[in-house]
Length: 190
Image 1: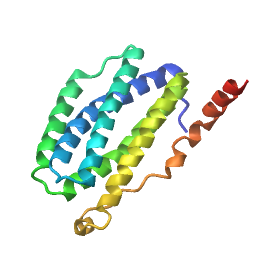
Image 2: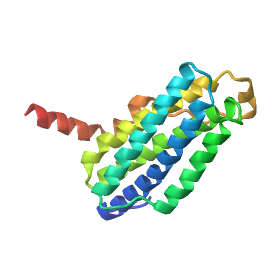
Image 3: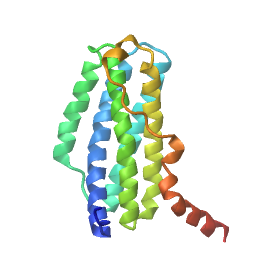
Image 4: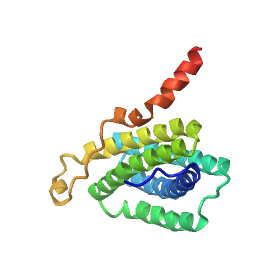
C-alpha cells in the first residue's frame, strides 16, 4: 500500500490533472463544434451543441482554478489538443454518425474519473473549497457519457466496437466527499 501523498504532492497532482483537463476541454470544444455541425437539425444536434457549451464552460472554470493556484496552462499541450480537436471536428463530417458518438462516449467516461481525481487531490491538498466545483463538472461529464452511451446502444455497428464500462451511478460521485458537505451544511445552520 502506497503512503498518502502530502499536501504539496497533492497540489502538484491537482495542477497536473487540471492542466490535462484544460487542454482536453479545448479539444472537446472544437470536436463537439464539428460534431453538432455535421448532424441534421434535431434533438441530437441541439444536445451536442449544449455539450459543446458545457465543455467551454469547464475550460473557463479550470483556467480560473489554475490561475488561483498560481499555475499556468500548458501552451504546448493546448497547441497539440487544439489540433486534435479541430481534426476530430473535421472528421465528424466524414466519419458518419456512429464513430463520433462512440468516441465521444468513451472520452466522456474518462473525463468523469479525471474530475473525481482532481477533487480528491484538491481535498488532500487542503483546497476543499475546490471540491464542489470539480464534482459538479464530473456530474456534467456523467450526463454527457450517458447521452452518448444511450444514443449508440442499439446501433448496428455496436457489435464491432467494445462497450466501455458504464460509470457507477451519478450519486456515487459525491459519496467519498460527503463529510465535506455535511460540515458545510452544519456551518450554515449554526
